Length: 271
Image (cartoon, rainbow, N blue to C red; front, side, top):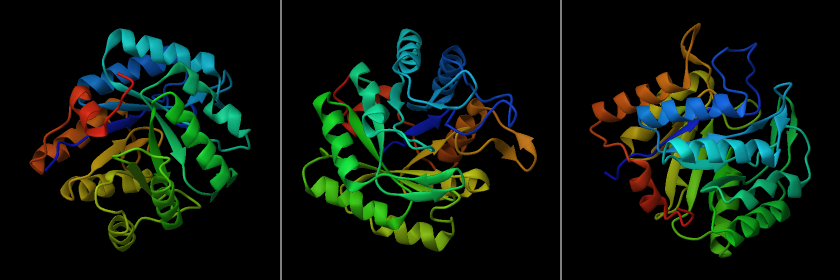
């Protein structure tokens, strides 16, 4: 099997220090956690900008500090989020592409999250993909539901996504596709040949989804954005979640991709 790429989603837009003291909020905290995840075996870090009050942000200065600090200390692949749990102009959501990170996430459809509707129109998706292409930034196509998979396929067929496309299949987010083995198998089966697959399990689903994805030869994402617990009632750190994914991979006789190897697998140009 191809070596497994582990992504660490270190902070997200939702978890706060009140939920867990381990979630990094400031750029310095994000940099520190990222380096720890890299040491543990993560090849990619997925970052959200956060405001001083721990809310959602798309501040380019926040992203700049994270990017520069991380690149000074390690060679991990840096991926910025374009997600927005509250309405934000599409231009604002993609503005940090000017910093030329290695990757950016691009959401491929709408969902009804507890915080409100998560709107990603087809017009906006095309706009974001054109913007990342201008800077040779690798898009990760976020799929919270089966319709999102088909939207991602359409974007690839239109030539808006270069080969190999990377689909990120998400299971268990409230207001999106629930996790069941049957849902996992069906969504997975709808991804065309030649597409790289990354998989997320939200909350208590992170562990079984990681195991299933590892066995099937896919890549995985773990971290406090998606799940703040290591086990029932026991808070996790980002490093612990990466270390567990590495152990699972080794038990399944999967090798872990280094950042350099992941760049080649993903065909990242911004190196």
